[in-house]
Length: 98
Image (cartoon, rainbow, N blue to C red; front, top):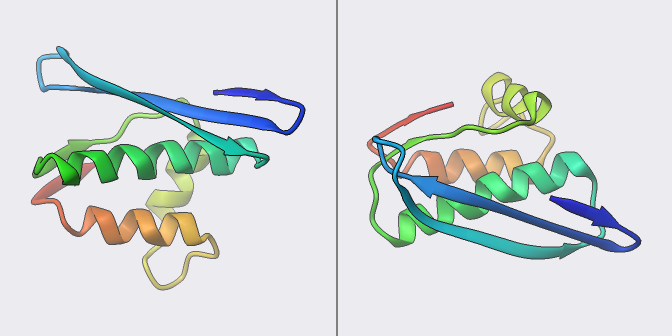
């Protein structure tokens, strides 16, 4: 993630269970918080996995705050629209873990 004056971008990588690189992604977000950028990265990664019909996912992030917010919230009680959307996408996987 790179943050500058009115410029925020996020990206990520997807690996298989053996750690082999499958694909990478990035996205320009405009102006947003670091926390929201981390959530956008998770959301975009999940969206790409669903589009490619994967049914299992292990989410890893360097943002403990984002991971805790996802783990400690539920679809109904999160104040974050991004976290609620992440939960909606996670429900489409046969197996997921953070």
